Length: 264
Length: 350
Image (cartoon, rainbow over all chains, first blue to last red; front, top):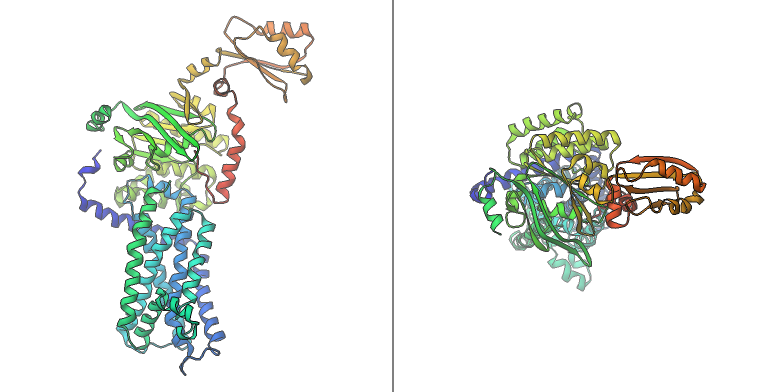
């Protein structure tokens, strides 16, 4: 048996990557094996987009232009935030079924179980974001700012989701129970999604709520995605958005991995 | 300490201690899950922890498999400390936990290949090993089906196969046959016996006394986090007072007390009764007493016998002599633990 102490750090870095990919593959297979899950988790956001656009669209006027132009950028951000709650549910499920015990008893890289999960979930967001843009195009949405900013807008939404996935992973490793994980997600998701510039301009809210809505990461990301899609001031919301993404990752990535290591 | 260092230097060659524990303790709030466990398991042998739910069996396994840190004491596997050298320990062990840890949405083959990849065997070797194990465990026909379609016995076999992917020299089995039907249980016992023949050191926990008797070279009887008694099955049987037990049942349950009175001077140990069934049993030393005398005394006293036998003591009797309660008295806990699993809330074993 080779003592682990003799293994070069480079080797371990390779393992972190390969182990992460193995776990990501395993989590993606879940969607392949459960086509109903994929179908319903696709139908739901499409339905919501149509409902929001046609139910609220008439009442909420947004300066003459069509509501879908205003709605879709925020909707892309919303969808990854809601989607991230699935990460904690999936991890809590792995915990309750003993899969995490199995993984922790293997000589695999420690962050790989969480990194593989977040990677698979990020792929899921990419799919959803592209799907929403497609549906948006059918009902009248158009990018007005060129191809490169449009790609950047989609990528930023996915990156934002990646950051929230680590927050969600931390919640999943902390609550350890599937039902609790489900409920816990909504406690933080609803306020940050609705008290934001996603559906309506922040200026229409009461002052105390504006204060929250203006610093809300969903607002700054929505504003950035909106500016990239339709034109307007990009840099100001962009740095705030990147600061949020960086901040969330710096705090919750190590916290989640720490929970994983120490979970009993 | 000295022992740990010396064994660590000679890892893999001439090892004679596979598992060792010194003063191992783990406390959950006020409950002492492990209350000072000292244990040595020689390489190539089978050690069984026997005890009811909550005795500390699972806690011990979780510490030895690096899933849990002890509060005090030290433990090592093939000379590697389970806390300081955890990653090395993980390369040397296989673990099949209390509930099968296999991914329902993956096929049997995919599950094993995934574990192989996570042991860093590489893709071709993982595929080859998965094929060998599926063949060996009679799962080859089901290998392309998702585990969701597997029976309980098949899941267990797959779980055990997953723990053997890296051909670990030390195998931990936490209640390997819990919840299996008798036929699947026999099948699993044969698999374990074959592994032992090939030189694998096996540490298993069980509530089934018959299982420890059949598989283990050494048995430790565990209760409330302590080892009550330890030895071979034969030694433990002798602990309960005699090498033979006389067991009988009176026809009229009301006569149980009378029968006990009549037989009081006969046995070599305490007479036990089960009033609900009218069963009486007591140990005797071969030759000092006979069935004939039992019959004569009861006949004289006017007690009708419904059933009478001379039998080998089982480990159940041992448990009773050591703890004063039967191992079965925790049956309710088992049911609760299993119900917990079904509802998705896995109860942490102590």
